Image (cartoon, rainbow over all chains, first blue to last red; front, side):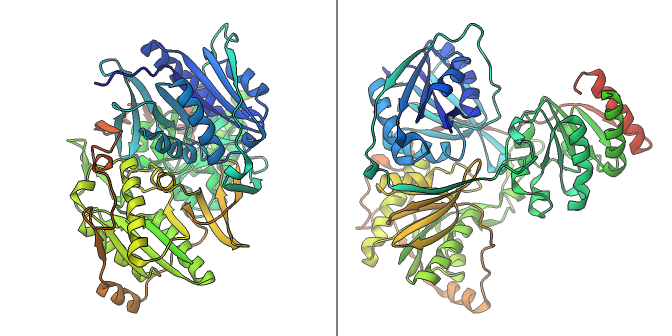
Amino acid sequence: MSEFTNKNIWVFIETDQGKAKSVGLELLNPGRMLAEKSGEKLVAVVLGKDNGEAISQVRQFGPDEIISVEGAEYETYSFDAYTYAMTVLVEKYSPSAILIGATNNGRDFGPRLSCRLKTGLTADCTSLDYDEESKNVAWTRPAFGGNLMAVIMCPNTRPQIGTVRPGVFKKLPVEGAGEASVIKEAITVPADNIRTKLIESIREAAAGVLNLEDAEIIVSGGRGMGGPENFKILEDLAEVLKGAVGASRAAVDAGWIGHAHQVGQTGKTVGPKLYIACGISGAIQHLAGMSGSDCIVAINKDPEAPIFKAADYGIVGNLFEVLPVLTEEIKKLKA
Amino acid sequence: MNILVCIKQVPDTTEIKIDPVKHTLIREGVPSIVNPFDACALELAVRLKEKEGGKVTVISMGPAQAKNALKECLSVGADQAFLVTDRAFGGSDTLATSYILSKAIKAVEAKTNESMDVIFCGKQAIDGDTAQVGPEIAEHMDLPHVTLATGVEMTEGKLRVQRDTDEGHDVVEVSLPALVTVTKTPFDPRYPSIKSKMAANRAVITEITNSDPDMETKPEYLGLNGSPTKVKKTFTPDQSKNGVILKEETGAEAAVKLAAMLSDAKII
């Protein structure tokens, strides 16, 4: 095994309009675990235009240090500015590992960075560990549409880099945190060196639709819903539970509900307190996106549906009979 | 306009089943297809060619069998195809694969005496799901890239790309040459005609091996040796929870029971 002088676990904090994106804060949780097991420091790296608010968010989750790079060129994401700044930081500080949230931008940035540094990148990880024997991060990720899990290591180069799926780890506030020192690094990227130009940015957060990743309760529908008109009964249940409506790929592909609602390997990964799967068979692609939920309820007329294996509570029955009564019962219990 | 599309032949992962006893993937009988995101990339490329004029070249790295996938591409609008194939490429991770493809693109440019204006890739292959090869090819070639495109158009000599973001979408402008990765487009890839299919079947697909005089690769960057990531083990996820399954006479009875159980467990 090669001996490295590289030290410290870095978590990249992506900012959006001055705020830290959730996934960066989530990753300070496994980042802390890796730092403790490797005896290294946990460092949050924040890139943005004005990082004051993001830094105070990050502090609650207990990094040992924060590196902040501020500048107008970091206000919106560009692979050129972000890769350049991060490469400068890596060359200066030599971290042993970098965790990047597997957001659309994170998965654009990660490969560019790792390729420039000629090191290994593991994509879209769903679990992380530290291998004491080899002193490598063990990155676990799904492949083949979630049918297979692979444990990947990067033994011969540093830093080890991985993108980690949002919603997999819980944000873990650290008591008494808030002392982390901030190192400000001035790194400027000339405008000419940024080869992509953002012309416009459209936000499509549908009105009244709760963000799936932030929802504590999700009521999801699949092929068994039979058609778009039947999603009303899911919305009714979601409403009494103050939850959001999700869907399986089958329902989205059929055009019954928008892609923003899709949960699964090719949709969103969610980890709510309660996930109610209605008329969803439980294909592995779907399970890959919701099996981290604290409690899973499955309602399906097919007793052999694989969703029941993943369920804490299941009802074998007709969802059109079950759901309206369930909604009424919960209303009574909440009254 | 010279457009190049990188495609991969993949097993149809929606058809993959797990052996219930051995907990391994059953690959027998699983059809091989053109990676669906690559098919979208090709469709976008062909539409761009139809609008701007030019030529679409497809390349794929893989075994001889991948020629079938390249022929499929020729039947739906690609003009020429190259297979990048060599035992020395086996076991490559994304860094090595993107290195090989970047050199192969240079080799295609040398052979055809053309330089590529736009390189398209699917956003990710459905077997590996890494989404890394596209941006890494761009980095090896020092080209700008845009990922997750759903549409492109030329505006005053530059390419405007509509790109999916976590919050909605962006329009990003990039000067050419550039690399663009494509996600599910709002339209489906076209179907071949009988005529185009027959012509594609007769087409000769040029192989580019590592000993090709136009392939300027260094051996230490190829295959397992050139791959910084190592697969330490694989396993099938265990989803079995042994939860409480209610099978009541009526749906209403089950619903009442479930509501009570969730309430007792303080879940709602």
